[in-house]
Image (cartoon, rainbow, N blue to C red; front, side):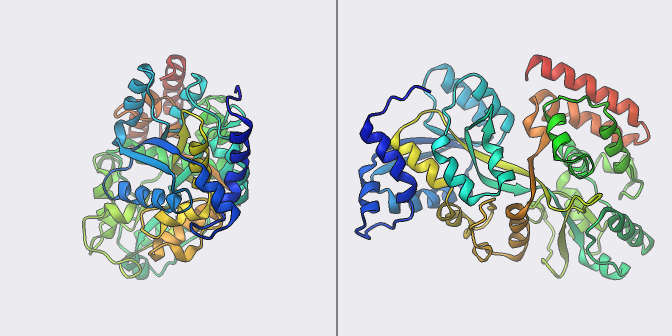
Amino acid sequence: MTNRWTRRTALLAVLVPLALLATSGSGSGATRSTQAVSGSITFDGIWTGAEAKSIGAVISAFNATYPNVHVSYKPVGDNLPTVIGTALAGGHPPDIADVAQPGQIQQWVSAGDLKPIEYARSTINSNFQPAFAKLGVYNGKLYGIVFKAGNKSTVWYNAHSFKTAGVSAPSTWPQFLKAAATVKASGTPPFSIGGADGWTLTDLFENIYLRQAGPAKYDLLTRHKIPWTDASVTAALKTIQSSNMYGGTSGAVQTDFPTSVNNVFQSPPKAGIVIEGDFVPGVATVKATSGTDYGEFPFPSINGSAGSVEISGDSIVAFRDTPAIRAFMTFLATPQAAQAWAKRGGFATGNTHVSISTYPDANTRKTASAIAAAKNVVFDMSDEQPGSFGATVGQGEWGLFQDFLRNPSNVSGIAAKLEAAAKSAYKKGK
């Protein structure tokens, strides 16, 4: 990238990370340097409602150190890729944006729309595990900061059904299957699957595939560098096969995600276990108390794969490069930025220097600490793939995994259909 800045601006950019250690009004030289950074930043994001207020708290924390930078946040919602696509076509994108789809970031990088944020790399490396830090790297350069993360490697269970069956939270796959069989024997179907929403099935596959095939093959399959007919894929499909679902396979494919959660959280429960992300308790519409009525444990290890976590993530990217943008983007990689939202709830981060006590409830403390401590961290695979294959109702992965749920014995047939759909989507690039 051509350097358009003066010697003075370059010096300020070097001082930015150091200035983050200062607090407003301390009178230090570092604080004076932050006051010298000024300007305005336009910021489009998917966060609305309470989440928009939470990012506002992060901006306020930033302004405590950088009082002369005005950050204007605009809540766009889930239509953000379309809104920004239109803005890019008109030549007027926002300065920065929050993006939930890594595949969309890759498209913007390939088109030359985004600016690298290498200036924030040292701050990220000092606060995040290597596996987490690399998630913002595209084509060898740093383009994004995964600011807000969701742990999609969690399992939720009905505490009463586990107590009746005399089982405890398992840590390995064999233990998991044994616990499920014991819950079934005690009179409760073990698994509640929200198969009407195809994305829940991709999450199940991805968690199994990550632990069974490993992060290297996970990356290859994500980028379609190995086919969906690969032996590692069929092995994962065979692992998914189960007849222990509430309503059977036909019932599971008609069950939406919120109902799958309520099946486990209600009293008496219709099923003992629901496999999904850290957002599960917020979906339940029945009355249930954490610890008393339900609990959580990490997705079980397969063949010694402990420490692997799949996440959904909101990444901050930049369409322009100014001293003010550099200051804000670097700040987002600090513990102070994460803590400003974490204490409000509904937030997790891979920042290892955020105290676990910052999180307001026990469940979040467990799921968030697993993200920060993970040895292997990967994005939700379907979020990184072309939308027609990884994120469209009734087709691609969503539709084909529903077909597999209806007929779980058809492993080779589904693998072949997944490969054909992936080839088509990657050829079109969307």
